[in-house]
Image (cartoon, rainbow, N blue to C red):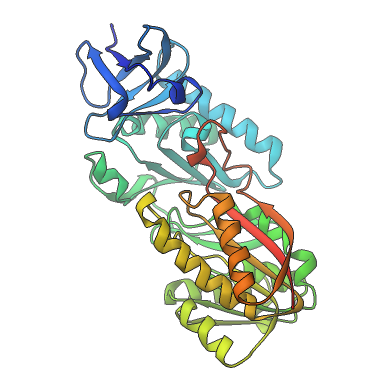
Length: 393
């Protein structure tokens, strides 16, 4: 079968030639040949030199997502090979590969596909029309390679609507309890894969949670935006004296309490349903202080246009968080907004420290765990910022 050829206009080809997997509508000169939305097409530069092969969707601003830099057949064998390679990578770098992000979209060379592994269960997200065409094949490959007890789809994501797809969630294989136990750094956590945020658990902070071990020992800890208690439970297990943890979600707090109980640290943890912004303000006014303050909020900047507002939000929580840290104590602050540049995020924290009249010393500045790989040619794949600083008067 002859594939349609997509020609990128002169001057617009460099980013894609340099390894970025997205082609935007505005970068196309013309298309030679017929195609249906979701079909595989070949991409060429203006000199008719082959760049890559991917799927096309004219409804999306990202009109093409490149799957291969070779003119190879995109079929079941291709999908299987990509998943096998991803699994080998996880087994090489992770201590607990049975619990991981198995496929991280573009960074695992299967654009817009997310697969999280929860032991014998999988959660799948097909976030574009092109990868949706392969959903049955993906399920079949997972069955062949892993013999899972169940597969669930979490396609209740707004980005699918931009691709002309409906939002939905449900079982793709089997019927099972969607409250699943996860192992992380030897600890046990619940994952609500049906109604939890994203796919039900955030594996991306795995390595960073270990980094708090030396600063959590014998510490009074405040954990804001605690979600289901992963940082709080790690801190307790690592020897913290007491943890106050807050989140606005009652559902998340109930799970956090169960997670503390599962790891036998309930006696150290005080989980509260509260707006973290308000709680930080109240704690500042009360002149309370902590040895370790952890700030791990949801994404404040989901679009590029939201950066200015997000910067104000990050400035406020870091200003208040820094004021609550005892002299010589520590602040852990995070951003999961890929639109928030690493240098900008650090600059916001530095600015907050100046306004709080604190001096900070950087201990760690890291990114996401290795099962959320990064393509240097695609900055969008690096989104998580984890900054640990020591705070002095």
